[in-house]
Amino acid sequence: MPAKPSVRRTARRLACAGAVTLTLLGAGLPAAADGGGQPGPDRFHRQRVTWSACEAGTPADLQCGKVTVPLDYAHPDAGTLDLALARYRATGPPRGSVLLNFGGPGAAGVSELATGGKRFMDLTDGYDVVSFDPRGVGRSSPVSCGLATDDANARAVGAAGDLRDPRVAHERLAAWRQLATACVKHSGPVLAHMGTVDAARDLDVIRQALGDDKLNYLGFSYGTRLGAVYAARFPGKVGRMALDGVDTLTESAAEQGLVAVEGQQTALDGFLDWCVQDAGCPFGDDRRAAGDQVVRLVRSLDENPVPSGSGSRLTGQDLVRALGRGLYGKRLWPSLERVIVSLVQDGDTRGVTAFSSGGVTLPARRGDGPAGTAGIPPDNLPAALMAVNCADDPDRPGAEQLTRELGRLGTAYEQASPVFGRARLNELLMCHGRPRGTDFVRDRVRNVDTARMLLVGTRGDPATPYRWTVETARRLGPSAVVLDNRADGHTGYLSSRCVHRKVNDFLLYGSLPAGGSSCGKDPEPPGSG
Image (cartoon, rainbow, N blue to C red; front, side, top):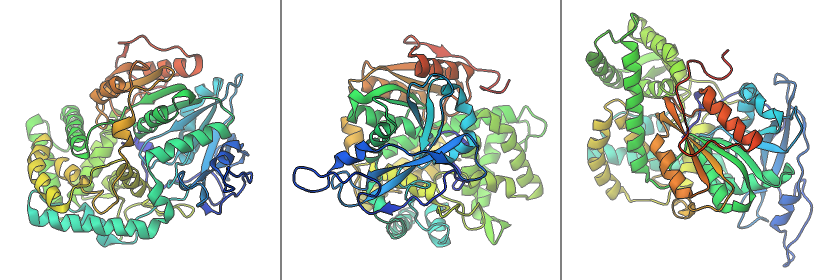
């Protein structure tokens, strides 16, 4: 699950200069060997980050560096890759680092810290604030599926259609298989080692390279899954860990999809409740009619896409992606309303396209979004999202079983949301044609024996529902303390003054809120006044 919309763009200006690619074994590392005379993994833990200025155009006080990790931890002599890092130095008495992960999976932490790092400056009262591009993301050997240069693949996997129809289902399954082959072709060897278990081991290498005895960590959305896996894998190394917008550890892809559809529909209902009170609402002032109009608009654009520049066309599924992004926080609602007005009244697709191209499910088609930056493929974010989610998913039903399940699930998804149901149902096919993933997340992340952790759940979260916070806390065991954010939007740290303060109190001073604590709705987000 992604975190804030600002971290979900498929391409952004990145902060660190220099290529970060697969390298030969031992680059920049001590030439240690294990007892058998072969290069051993311990040398990766004896690194120290060398910090230097980032490229021009980034904040002057941002520093960049890198850490080298094994491509395959089971065979550390089989090659390495470099992970890009960035940091803001502590301004108060230093007590080590706090590491940030912004979600996705697929969000590039270096660029996000460069463009949005000022929102975390109060943490520099005690910490170096550090983020990184996870393996396969941004400047860390980015994966790709070639979608920016293969419009046929992009259209096939993102097409509209009722997957309850076996003919449509088989066509779409073939398209996802073809995409899986394209991802292997365009990504290189890192694609086979993209799972969260690998990323958690990377976190431990980063922790030691930063010189920290324990990992202090703030993870958003998917970043909470990464934090939970780290806690299960390295329980004795957990320092102060805060998880905001808590992901599920147990539900199948089908169950997650249905929950996501329900959350998105709830958020859409909230948007429409707000919209019809405004004289400029493109759906009028009748609330029931407004919901029907959204459905009709999506279906109409799927049947008759409209030109959107550079030879491309805007479809109903593009509008669905734009709606999904615009519903992540109430601050986006006025902008979402304006771009829909422009589309409906003037036929201007630019605003909807700008929202749509920031989505994480599929990239924009050629001409719909920015090109890749500094050699980073424009489809890196969705390619990484698919790679990580599939690496973490042990279920691989065959084509016939999937077709039967689509027939059964299609009605439930449509009933949950006639707007988002079909798109979410289609996403259930994203791992078709890929190797089976690990069962570690589902089976082994439980009852962790760690220091106390803070889990933040937001009641009106459209992406990671509050019940996932409660379920994950129960699964992690007594170490987990839940903060109930009684507000709307995805995650709470950047939208709630109360959550912001309580998370900072924990990370900086070790002060946990009492069990059962909650935060109410804030009139303004942190830093707005």
